[in-house]
Structures are given as C-alpha cells and as structure tokens.
Length: 154
Image (cartoon, rainbow, N blue to C red; front, side, top):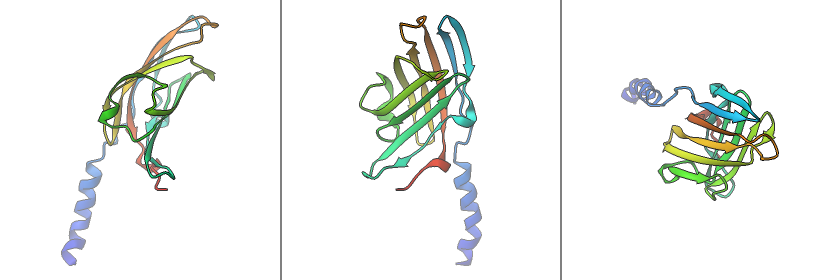
C-alpha cells in the first residue's frame, strides 16, 4: 500500500503528460457578400467534447468560432477514423450543423475530416452564402482540441 501511494503522483504525471492540450487553431478565407474574409479561429471558444446521451451512445458536439463565423455541430457519435473524408453536412453522421456569418445562416456546407482521434479533430469546411445575397464562398480549416472539462456522463 505504501508503494502505491508513492507511485500515485508518478502515475498522475504520466497521465497528464499524455493529454494533448495544445490550443485549437484554424482560419477562414474567401468572400462573403462581396467582402474579402480572412479570419483566425478563436481558440478559447473552439473545441469538441463527448456527450453521453440518454440512449447510451456518445455524441460528439463541437463548436468553432472565428471573428464573424460560427459553427455549432454534433456528430451522431464521437468522431473517429470512420468519419474521415468529405461529405455534405446533411450526412446522417451529423445530428446537426449550423454555420452562421454575422448571425445569418449559410446556405450550404461541405465538411472534410482529415484526422479524428480521441484528443484532436482536424479538417476543413467550405460554405456558401445564400444566392439572394451577393454570392460568396469561404473555406475554413480547424484543428480542435478535445475539451475534456465539458465531457458528460449521463
């Protein structure tokens, strides 16, 4: 028992050392309503987490914030290798996907996931503004940290 008490701090240090706590990064470039866009991801407001729902599966909510662009989305299950690839955001793998620019919804979006691991979600998305506005298209990249502090156990 004494030996275990001595090893506990070492074990905790090893576990903490394995967590990828780098901040989230990314940017957006393109044109919206005739205006050039060049924005950086707001690291403190951009991440994904695990949400145990009442049905027993683990949803994967995520949020990304750029200066004027916001994305609120949720994978039907925690993102993993099976989600790598490119697909329209109405794909059943996503329970929801909302992209807004200055509070106005974007009309279409395509998501590409290049890395989906326990602690990181990396990829890009492209969206277009509605045709009744001045048409535009923006490409955004993201490298999201997992916000373990937001994980839930229902």
